[in-house]
Image 1 (spheres, rainbow, N blue to C red):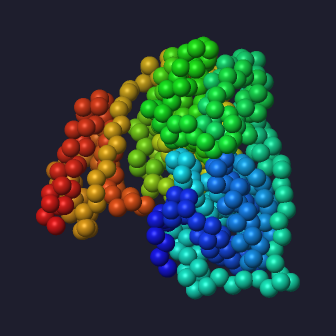
Image 2: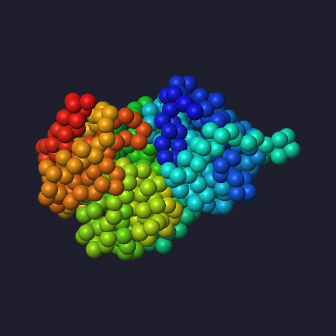
Image 3: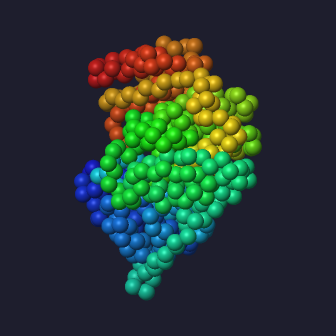
Length: 457
């Protein structure tokens, strides 16, 4: 079955509204997911969405599609993606459906499929679901149609569980009365982040809180998109600035001096906080900054890499018994809460760290080595990449190599990672070093065999 204009990944399907992602496509995938997830007899499916303009329309379509295969649908409304994952666990549901394109631009939307454990579908599970869709989805007859019920308490439960974390000194944080600048970029963060910060006694200075999905800037919370928040931090003298993406699974920071250091520091700071109270392994994906592995080394705990993709990191964390982990894009995963990226828990951990340190985050950063990441991409050659990997390993025989997801080459103070994109016909090349020049040099070295291979085709 061909789906032109769509990006079908490990755990979902996304596309531009009306150009690939249509009501018919949403109905097809939602019905297939409902039929696949409920095949064992548990027919409960949780549905939530972010703030995108197309969200209400696609939600109505998805609810009907799920009813058409006999599901009992629990609609939790506009909520963060981690709230949907936690609601699946709370309701002991067969699965969950998130209607969100995460950090993608305004014209995009997507369906994210969540399994009964609260994790996104694995590659094998996604393949099973699509095979059912190809074979033909069995529909319910008139007397076995599903129903829809509302659950308006999912966000409150999420907040309660964050505030109940045993190593979170809620009273101590409240006494500090931290000044926090907040930018939710017109996303679903507005339904949870102000409530969390208020519960922690913060003085909140918020911008872009309208949940209308009309992103006035690129919604990905990378440093170059956070100029407005940086200015707000400086203008109000905030202790920290928090930025969330539209579905609230990523958290980016602006330091007290008005600088956005990059999303990798969110996980590094979170790991530093948690490891003081819970020692154990740390897991991140292969494209994450050394600032995270440096924390694990400093704290004397094991560190593991996983393939790129939240579900891959979550499963690696489960296998390793990790204490904390996540992705360098600002995605903090705390298994003590749930195995999913969670911006609210990331924010709570930042405030706990500020309480424990008794000094600004900018001062904490000044103590540590600094790195610069450079991200690049180029067209994927129409041949296997094994020859590229072999050439690079031969050129850099002194590097530690990891080939579980493309090729990552590591040295004590720098690294480079090449991997084919799972959603686009490109090769991503990411490098990090003490300076931008060091990182760009690694990018150039990695590009050479790629360019030679492409030129020979």
